[in-house]
Image (cartoon, rainbow over all chains, first blue to last red; front, top):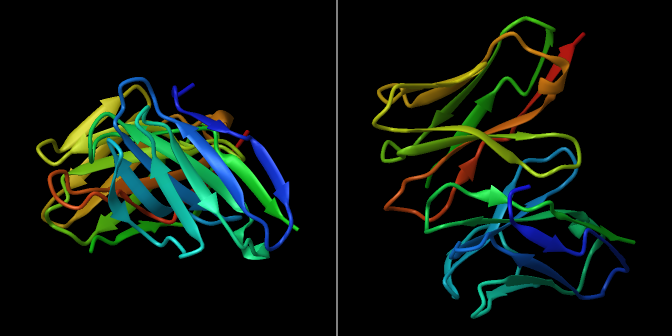
Length: 112
Length: 113
């Protein structure tokens, strides 16, 4: 167990809908990262937050947004969902920026 | 920006054999190189990492080597066991520079009993 928690574990929804994925970092970690992993694909970096501020952006669609709250948990919002958004979404955290990242168990999203 | 290439994409070995996974990176400023193991449907788990001021690091049956001149690093697994079967990802980052940890595409290792 890495100490990073994610909810929900599984999510099934329909195209056009909006969902929110939640991540709680390890105790004391200030950085949160979001990744998307499609079937048989690698880890695509989406976005990073450090102590409440956005620090880096990757291949994140405009339909997706995220934020980190004062208690350091983070939420990833996915809207106008498409079939191709079906994937595993991982959150990771690290103590500071650019340090070892520890991954949560992931949220498996299925868009029907 | 940084680009990490990983090869081979799949590798099948017999139990007890050694396995080597190679990665190359493009940004000479990269200075931290973690390796993650991901079992099917599970989270990536850090198994070993190396910083640019070190050429080699070992932890029981796994070792990582780094060649800064050639900009490549490798993961070595000795005495492989069926439970080593997983996808292995290498990654690189420039600590003090870009915030992004760039991953290779992963290598699926199968250890046959």
